[in-house]
Image (cartoon, rainbow, N blue to C red):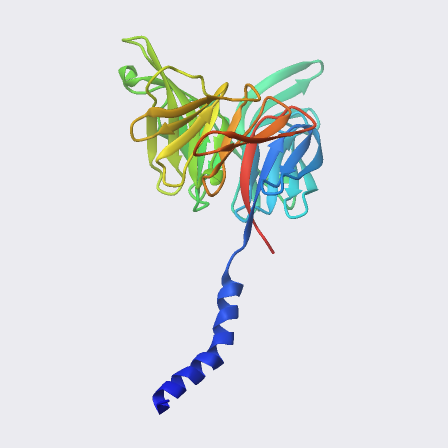
Length: 355
């Protein structure tokens, strides 16, 4: 063997053990989990093993948001007056954050936590108790310092405001009302971003977005909401989805062709070529053509929540009934249905960074 070749072999043998651990250590390992809100429980479901962990909470579990690493889940509970914080590594309750106190009754209809979990933003409908009467107050976004459990800011918002979603950069929040607004966290400014229900030209269609089953970080930072549009001149109604790219800020409207199916929610694939939507039926939609490529009955019956796995291979369906179903995303064949203790509202898909 030549001298130069022997030297290269020697260096490879010596350096190999040093290089290998560096790459292994730098890799981020994640685990996909499903979280489903029920009555007095949040259900944590491992989609691989199909094991269910029941996490007790107070009242109906509704809207959800989580930190960038997926390790803390924030769930609206307690008749929409509290937020329960769940450690997703242990699937245990860490804390309960109160939003009503004294004569003030605050009910939460949307929430978003900053990427690190320091500040929780909640859309709040408020009422003041005066003796035996309740006085309605204008809606606001209340900002809570999570560690101190203290409201540190209130932001005026339009009536009808509901869902909140952080952009990936953590500097802006999508504020969904009858129209779409964006709140700049650093500048403390709320501005109209995209008209939906109140367009400048109604002949372009009046939109009605169902933002109750929002998809954001579980849809690869693409906000996805079902959207119904009405055209006054023709009296035509269409169904489809409206998406907001939570990286670039781009808004797109998709109107689907064919007979209306009735849609509660849906999710979009990573390549953004297909959407999966449903209610009584489940449909795979080609977003380039707007056509339903495949439509099948939703076997368990009516469902609210339709979501998709991180690898785009499995469709998760829950909401309305006491179960979670798994469908093959390619064929829409029902693979499995797991019974749950209570009726549910939605299914969220979280990629949890492992320690």
